[in-house]
Amino acid sequence: MGRLDGKTAIVTGGGAGIGRATSERFAAEGAKVIIAEINETNGAETAEAITAAGGQCRFVSTDVTQEETIKNMVAETITTFGRIDIVVNNAAVFVLHGIEATVEQWHQSLDTNVIGTSLVSKYAVEEMRKTGGGSIVNLGSISSFLGQPNFVTYNATKAAIATMTRCMALDLADDGIRVNAVCPGTIWTQIVEKNTAEVGLDRAAADADPDWGGACFLKRIADPSEVAAAILFFASDDASYCTGAHLMVDGGYSAQ
Ligand SMILES: NC(=O)c1ccc[n+]([C@@H]2O[C@H](COP(=O)([O-])OP(=O)(O)OC[C@H]3O[C@@H](n4cnc5c(N)ncnc54)[C@H](O)[C@@H]3O)[C@@H](O)[C@H]2O)c1
Image (cartoon, rainbow, N blue to C red; front, side):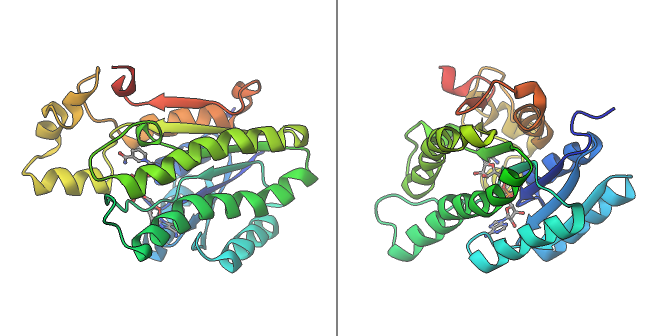
């Protein structure tokens, strides 16, 4: 028996990194999964791999900055699986600039990370209300709470996610919809792999490096599956009394 048997989940950005690991874990726990992803190659390939492994999964091409594609994705979810129980707002862009950021860079960051999260929730909630509730899991970050050099455009969006999570939890409580956030530290996904490679570090060296894995108590970078496990907790009925909460998955980084 899986922890998500009988439930349908939407995972935005489910074609790579944390979103892919979450989609795979959810399917293994019995959920029917919709991968709402802008990268058609990765979205389709992930859905195929999950299906080949015995899971129930469908890719729906989605750009969370485009309202019409979100509406279409929600409609396709209902047509395919009949209901929505879980939404994981995982899709994000890493627009990393200080105060010299242009208006275009600000829009790029805000449109995907903040407005995208809000709009996906808005249209999914309309369906979740019809079946008596559900769970929304937003992806925050250590960057929701900390100052980091030249990260103004990214951290502002992740701080917004933290506050949106609390406000949405309040607004949706009477609908039986819980809203929580998982806040990762440094996770081995494409952005971290690229940035460490640029300074000549492979995975083992990045784990040990004081600026990367070595910066947290556990002295290593995490795998995406370790974040997926925390997302699963909030998504599942095990978290029945959790709403408006933030769970740090950061190897102790923010506890320093
Ligand atoms: N990797 C980390 O170290 C880390 C740390 C803290 C927080 N996070 C958060 O975790 C989440 C996932 O991060 P990741 O490292 O796995 O990212 P990633 O870049 O590996 O994956 C993100 C996915 O989102 C998709 N996406 C981007 N824009 C989209 C859009 N407009 N519509 C639909 N899909 C879109 C991308 O195609 C990609 O598949 C993000 O919210 C990120 O802010 C990551």
